[in-house]
Length: 405
Image (cartoon, rainbow, N blue to C red; front, side, top):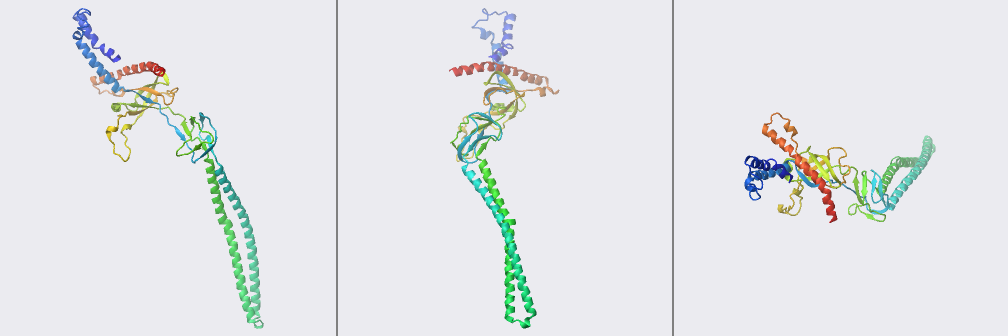
């Protein structure tokens, strides 16, 4: 209607003024309800054609859409292991910080494993003390065996010096005794080395393994306390003590990260793919913040239409099954800091995007007609801006009437 009224100022009105003041035709006499088409046919035809062209130009160069949503991401609250909830630390809805405990699972099994790991370390410490005593005993055995060996060697040496008065059998006995005492000494030294090796290598390795097992048990015990991975807010957190949670089948709830709702996602028609570019200025009005126009800027345009995606499967895709043509996904952010304050995340909005030819008009090599054309394209953005403001006025009424019905 607005476009029709605007175009009539340049087509229908001049035609009427010409008929009235140049040809002298008057309304109610020469121009009647029956002859208005014949008398004003040029103005009416030109008005309709110009209106259609204006509407097409406005909606193409300055696209609009009602498919705008402030989408936000949620983080599932999942434990790393199965278990029964023993204690819940937050309520149904609460602000949480990163690392804050949300709930705790039953940890009796993990606590028992940790206690076993601690006992193993204590046992190994006791074995290290025993190993030190064994080394001391082994050193005494080495000294004793060494003394016995030296005594046997001295006795054999003495008897060999007086071999002419000593029976040959006695010397052979002493030689065997020396060999036996030497074997005993070597065995004592081997036992000492084994005890020292056990104290310096084996037991420390076993203690390190036990400490690693203790650390693993502590990690498993810590996993029973589920904490917030990011700062944000938990909503509809109905988990209570006694519930069973499973990381694969039954999550505990959702966490909404802080800072969500700072980007709006709009779905424009595919025909706007050649017009909408990053950096374009836009405007939105949202249901959750009525009677407010929020300046925005196009930050990015998705290069793919979601309706055309194909997943590998066991059946061939029939293109006819794609019932929805899909929209061009555009990301909008507020032009000024805090522009979306007061807009509830997930709110539905209406958006306009405006083509700007300022940089092209700054070039000096443009022709006159091209310059007039670009000026006209920028000027008709006012039509869509007025339409958006009318929509902002009517939107609360439509929503409230819809709720009443």
